[in-house]
Length: 80
Image: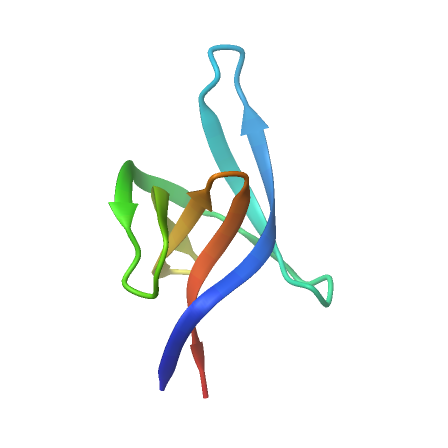
């Protein structure tokens, strides 16, 4: 399976100190997936291209990498 950058909408909480906490992902078709837990946050390069702040998240029991790249969000995803 081919991996790629899937740009998505993210619902988040921005705290008064500027800290950003992603709460859920919203697909283009409107499906919404809550983020169960943010495990870590660090600047990283994505294996599918691009870089930015990487949030390691637990979503429906699976660990996924969510990136904030400048002012856009993407998740490393797979094409069948």
